[in-house]
Structure formats: structure tokens, C-alpha cells
Amino acid sequence: MRCAYSLMVHGGAGALENVKDEKTAVRYLDSIRRILEHGREVLSLGGSALQAVEQCATLLEDDPIFNAGCGSVLNEDGRVEMDAAIMDGQNLLAGAVAGVDGVANPVQLARLVMTKSEHVMLIGEGAMRFAEHCEVPRVPANYFYTEDRIAQLKEAQLRHKMMLDHDEAGDGVSEDQKYGTIGAVAFDSNGNLAAATSTGGIVNKRKGRVGDSPIVGAGVYADNETCAVSCTGYGEEFMRTVLAKTVSDFIFMQGMDASEAADAAIEYLRRRVNGRGGLIMIDNEGRCASRFTTRKMIHGWIEHAGETMLSF
Ligand code: ASP
Image (cartoon, rainbow, N blue to C red; front, side):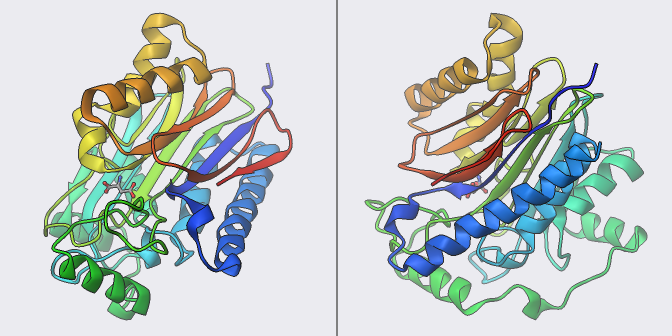
């Protein structure tokens, strides 16, 4: 039986209404819309959920306004250390990389780990050796270090803080630095689910810190029996609550739909760890849902091949 495809993408939890400059706000929304339309084309032509999430995540990584790929935030040493993961709900295959630098698209490297290695996750130097083995081209250092990112790191260091790229006001973080991590989830016409998440992590993070984004079950999860999930927010809180898998378990064990599972998971995140962030998800009937504990989350979706929707 053919299913009507669904797709969701996010560009991080935060409050777009706080962007002082309207042009910047429009930039975020245009980008999300353009990427959703690209994904629509992939899925409507019979492409797989896995292809759709890899391609959407790649486009998000290629847009410097997001905290992933070329727009990645900087660690305490002023270096980029990116994390990414991808998961195929059909067979629970997954690939992930952590602490990588010098590649334009960590999500593509994660997919190579999934398809061309016998492992699920490779980190740092080992991941880069594998990239070389797969002939993934290296990008020069100046591909990453934008003036904004350097200024953002200086601000965080001045405050002796780590911060989300899209931190909420009240955390002592300037209002124009709130957006970030990217993710995509898809449901294709064959009923398959897939998810991808990619990030530069948290501004001024310790060297070697890995967040939730590349951790299967924390920042990403996909299982055809339940749902596909991508998370964004303070990674440590999503790791401690294994949030993406928790969403899936609510569906598997309690028969919830996307909306109910997203509610239950966010309630759990808030109640147990006072977690800051959000998630996008599609369940095994192609229903979309998103929830967040931050004021807003930049995201958009196409449910059952319908209209393109944006939320910020
Ligand atoms: N979850 C990411 C991390 O902790 C950050 C984010 O979502 O912005 O690395």
C-alpha cells in the first residue's frame, strides 16, 4: 500500500520573535521552507525517508545560519567539533560521528559509517581517518570560522558560560544568538521512517564534549514500528532522559500517537530534569508532532503530502 509521505525539519529550539532584525527572521524561515520543498520533491518522486533526511540535513548544514556544518559554534579552544547521526527505521541501522572537524557534511559521514563500516559511531581522529578512507573531501579551516561564531565564543567566555547557540533570555545570553542544531525526520510512501540530527554542539563547550545529537536514543531515533525523532536543546538533559527512545517507548508500550507521545516525553523531560529544548517527530502513520520547553522552536513540516507549515 502506498502511503502519503510526511516530513519535518528543525533549526533549533529558541525564540525567533526575539530576533531584532526582521531580515534575519525571514532568512531562517525561507531556509526552512526551501529545504522542506526540496524534501517534498525527494519524497513525492518515491525517494526513501533515509534519502530525504540525509538531503534535508545536508542543506541545513550548508546554511551558515544554523549551528551545524559550516555554521557550527566553537568550543573552548575556538575550534569546531561537530556531532551528527542518522537512523533508518526499517532495520534500525544507524551511523554517527562525534567531535569531527574538516568535513562539510557530518550527516553524510554518519551515513557512511552506517553503510560502509561495521560500527555505529566513530569519533574524532578515527572518524576523520574513516572519512579519508571513504574519500570524503576535506574543507579548509576558513570554511567554518565566521565572525559571528568568534564573537559568540568571546561573549560566552567573558561570561564564563557554556551556552546553546539558541539560548533563552534569562540565561544571560544575548538575544540574537539563539538558533542552532538541525534535524530532519521523514515518512516515505513505503511507510518507512528515518531521522537525522547534526550540530556544532554548545558554545564554549569543553574540548571532547559530546552531546545528545549523535547518540542513538538520546538526540535521534527511528523505528518503523513506532516513530522517527530528532531533538534539540541542552544535550546533557536529553542524554540523561534518553529522550528520543523514550518517545518511541511511549508509542510502543502505551499505544500513543505522535501528539500524545510528544506530550508525554516533554512532560517527562521537564519533570525529571527540567530539560530545555524540544523535538520533532513523525509516527508510523505519518502523523507529525513537535513540542518544546523553550519558548519557541524553529521548525516546519509537511503532513501526509499536504501544505508546507512553518512554526517559529
Ligand atoms: N543538542 C545539542 C547539543 O547539546 C545542542 C542544540 O540542540 O542546540 O550538542
